[in-house]
Image 1: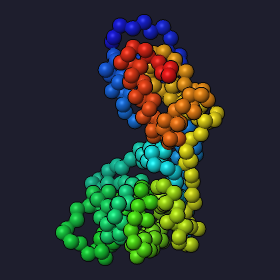
Image 2 (image 1 turned 90 degrees about the horizontal axis):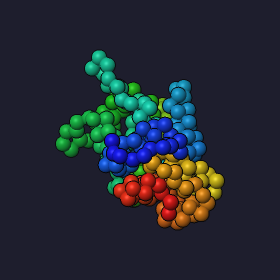
Image 3 (image 1 turned 30 degrees about the horizontal axis):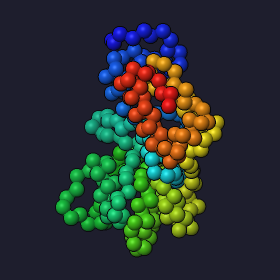
Image 4 (image 1 turned 180 degrees about the vertical axis):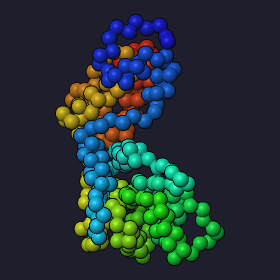
Length: 279
């Protein structure tokens, strides 16, 4: 433990107080890790996901479209949710209640099935045929007990030609009808545009937006939460409208870039022995 007169750490959350007593190099290591900040919109998104997860099985299941700019917290929300429903195994049977698959950058039905099977750890033989992949994917999804399927980077569907886009949108309808589990699409506004191009899918996917942050009370509350979670030994006066405007200008309004800026500032504060973010 390094020599530092710790008088009062009441400005920090209890977990951060423990970290603040660690040596500088250990704190810097912890600062560089991802951290969850449960701001209201993120909590609302988690609650929506939990509601879908608990939805009773029926012929037409509800779906969700989580939409927001790049680096604005979508994947962090999905990962937080997935970790509350981790895969497990018993009697040689694996269970994956929440499966997350990334939409390929060059979208096609066969590439999606390859990604889906890879996410389930399924071995693929060389040059598999589409009907075989489809039946294997459906069988595994049922066998593994998948209750909610998340498709990240859904906006990539617009990178394909019109035929590929139509085939993939048809695939989404097919999966929803066949599996009777909720589907969650995650992506930028382009994902919303892709879903809107299909009348049936638009009715099935309810959009939830994660907009860019603005300099207001909500942002000040977010900054206060960051300040309370960063293991610095002196209070950081960042929960102000002036600081919000400055940081949002630097981060282009995204929470991911904002978190990166604050992490870098906190590391600099530890390295300089300043122990606070003040500018």
